[in-house]
Length: 299
Image (tube, rainbow, N blue to C red; front, side, top):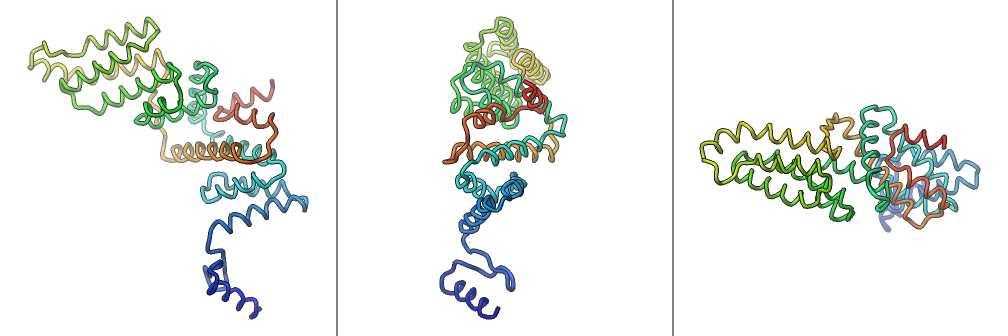
C-alpha cells in the first residue's frame, strides 16, 4: 500500500495527471480524463451483461450538466445507442409528467405547433412556442433565425409588441411606436377578423392632432385598458401570450426539461449508431405532453 501511495504521489508531482482531493483520495486533474474513463466503464459493462443497469445509472444524471460529456461519449462508444437514447427520452418525459400545469403548457405548445405547415418539423415548432412563452424578449430573433414561416414570425412580432407596450412609458412617443409596430404587423395578417380588430386598436391610439391635455390625462388612463384589449385580441385569434405563471420550482423543472431535450438531440446528432426508426420516433415525440405520448402508444 505504501508503494502504491508513493506511485500516486509521484504521478501527481511529476505529471499532473492526478491530484489529491482529500487525504488518500485521488482523481484526475483534467475532467476530460474522468469523463472518458467513466464512459468507457459504462460501455465495458456491456461485456459483463450489466449494460441496462449501467445505462440506467447514467440516465439518472440526465439533468446534471456535469454529466453532459459522459452522455455524448457513451453514446458514441456504444455499438448501438438505441437503448440509451430511449432511456433518456423516458427519463426526460418523467420530469414533467406529474405536474398538471406543465402538462397544460406542453399541450398548448403542441396545439400551436399543429397550426404550422409541415416545414419546419413539428418538434421545432413546439420548441419555438415553448421558448416564446418563456422568453418573449428573444422572440423576434428566434423567429428570424429559425424559420421563415409567416405564422410563427407573426406570433413572434405580436409577442414582442406586447412586451414593448408593457414596458414603455405612457406618452405620445409610446403610442406612436405602438402604432408603427401595428402598421408593420398588419401587413402580415391574413385573417380578416384579426386584421379588423388590430386596425381598430391602432385607430384608438392618440395622434399628434389631439390636444396635449387629452394626451397627458385621457390616454394615460386608457393605456392599461388598451394594452389588455390588445393582449386579449392576440390570445383570441393567435392562441398566444397567455399569462403562464410558473413557480420557481416549475421554472427550474422546465429549464432542466428543456436542457435535457437539447442533450438528447445532441446525442442523436453526434457520431452514434441509432436505428432510423428509433431516431424518427424520438424526434417526432420531443416536447409532447403525456396524453399525446400515451395516445401514440395505442396507434
